[in-house]
Structures are given as structure tokens and as C-alpha cells.
Length: 165
Image (cartoon, rainbow, N blue to C red):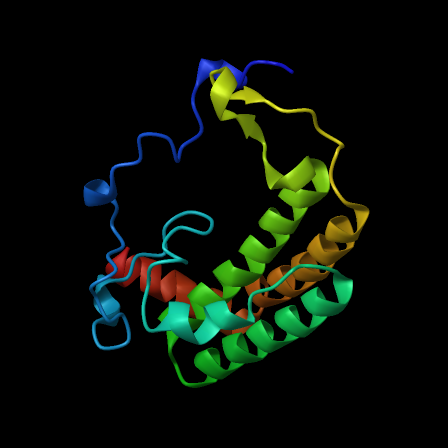
């Protein structure tokens, strides 16, 4: 085991919810202008009603489950996009990205645990995870990139960031 890079704790340690720009008590469909694109997967597990619409389909147990999940979430992505619901499209894209990153974590680390919280958050041994999770990750990666590179999505994202952040 090696120390965490830069001797930093993982970002979720000492997390301050009050400083987080996404709030669980906002209906982002009714108040879409309060949504921020942010970095990576930020807000994905908070923003309602999308969390309740997309989240139940997010699964990566094995490649068979992952393909059904990614296809369904990608269909939701296209539906939101065609209805000019950028927030829903962006959150769908984030769920696809999160499918990739979480499945990769389980492929890389036994039980998906990257840090040893009982040992000053030292990195655990890499390469101890499950191969089928790597296959699930590859499926999500393909759908994530397909969504991210979709021209209508790129155009809406650029316009959204210019207008709302």
C-alpha cells in the first residue's frame, strides 16, 4: 500500500454539504436555471426528479446487466435531449459516466474500496477487483462517449454553460 497522492484524503472525507451547489430540495425540472453542469458526475445523486427517473436503471453488476442499464439510460438521454430538457440529458450523461467510473473502481479494487480508512486513507492494492466489472465499465464507457459526443448535446451544453454556468 502506498500513501494517497499529495497526502490528501479522498474528497468525500470532511465533505461540506452546505457548500455543495446542488441541493436535494430543488426540483430541477421546475427550476432548471438553478442547475450547474459542474465537473464529472457532480450532482448526479441529488438532482430531483431526475435522480428518481434515471437512478433506478443504473446497474453494473455484470456485462448483461450493464448493457440493459446503459441502453435504457441512453434512451432517457435521447428523450430528454429531444424534449429540450438539457438538465435531464446532462444528468443521464453523468449516470453513464458514473457507470463507467464505479464499475472501473470495482474492476480495480476488491469490493470497490480504493482507500483504507483505518490507515490514514492509504491506497489499497490495485488489481484485486473483478474482471466482469471491467467489461461492464467498457459498456458504460461506450454509451457515455456516445452521449457526450452527440452534436445536439454538445450544442445545448455550450449554450447552457454560457447562460447559467
